[in-house]
Structures are given as structure tokens and as C-alpha cells.
Length: 286
Image (tube, rainbow, N blue to C red; front, side, top):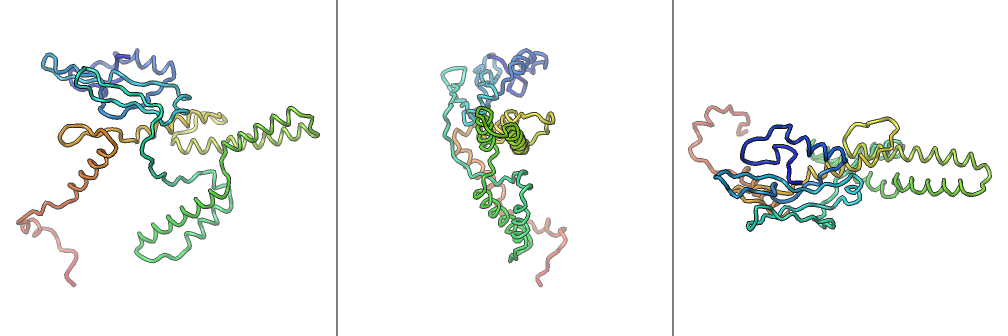
């Protein structure tokens, strides 16, 4: 596209007026495209210090439709620094096999309609725990989580699967000469409507956005929102203290660990008695 969407995608040089981005923004919005993001260095072009000014911009990107993004959630774009050119190498990977992270616990709001869920929580929360108050709280939450996950595995609450099966049954009833055909169709449509509602609640909760129009079956929108939020929450690149960039998940992990280890490690300061003299004593030797 050879353009940027905002001054946030430009480093160095003078700031551009906001109106200069409007044409490119209109193109993206009018075609209902989304940016899949990137991993690596944040820019894709540099002027290589021409005229004594260092300017870097993200001139290259991958745009796609929400439908394509929903079907290819693991696809990613890599920015690879290239010292032989003023443009970085842009690698578009549609079959990314990154590190598998442990999934966090997610309480589906659809579970509250089942009576046994309340009974499970009451039973697990009421169990006696030993230790400090915080440890007891942690153990109660953990106990509820494990019990709910076990219940979820044993009970099929997959609304998407149920919708597919109901549609198939509805097509069969409508196509064959069933007795009381109209009544069967009415019952199946009612069940299908309830299944759609459960799926909407699930994706609305996952997307963390407000419902747009009451009754819309816009789960594609919510699914795309979830994918986009996951992309924003992902740390794909990190600048080191020496000014270079991390190029892999292992480097990012080591950089974060090293930063917090330095932050919480004492430098063993000397002669601080004069400072501690003015700090009131709260805990005595007794």
C-alpha cells in the first residue's frame, strides 16, 4: 500500500497531518478489512539516514476480511530486518505453529442455566481448607475451577455442534413426509433459536464488547473481535535494553525474566541507617 494509517506507525521526521491518512483509512473501512498485525521489528521501511535524518515507517502490511481471519486465526506476518535494502523482509505465514500456551479457565455464562453448576460451586466452596486466608481463597477458587472443568468435559455444551445437528434434523423433517410435520418444525426452530442465543452469549462474552442489535446472529463479528484481541494481547516483539530487538519467543521470555529479576534484586546499598532512622518501627523483636 506504501502508506501508513497514523503517526503511530512513523518514527522520526515531522508528524503528518491527520487528514493525510484519510484516503487509506477509507479504503480499509469501506472494504471491511482488518490488519492481522505483525511480529518482529515494528517498521518495514527506513530511509537509511538520508539527509542526516533517521525515518522509519510501517509501509507494508497484510489486510484480510473478517471471514478469512476467522478461518485462519493462526496466520501471522513477520517483519525481518534486511540490512541490504531500505525495506524489511515481510514473511506471511498462513500455517503458523507457534508455542502452545496453557489455556486459562473461562467461565461460560451459559452454564448458569444448569442447576448442577450452582450445586457444584456451593459444594466446592464449602470445603474446609487449611492455611492463611489468601491461601484458603486460592484453594477454594481452584477447587471450583477443577470441578467445573470436569463437569464441562462430561456434559456436551457445544452450541455450535448443536446448531449444526438441529439444522440437519430440520432439513430432514422439512424434506420428508413426517406426521405432525408443522409441529416438529416449530419445536426444532425453537431449539435452534435457543442454541443460537447460547452461541451469541458465548462469543459476546469472549469478545468483551456490547451487543449491537437485539436478535442479530452476528457471531462472525464477535469471533473476529476475539481473534483481534488475542493479536493485541500477544507480545510479538520487544526492544532490549541495548536497543536491539528480540527475534524469537525464547528471547522475549528471557528479556522479561531478566528485567524483573533486576528490578526485584537488591543492589545491597551501604550506609542507609540515616534513611531508616526516620522510618517508624512497626514490628518489634518480640
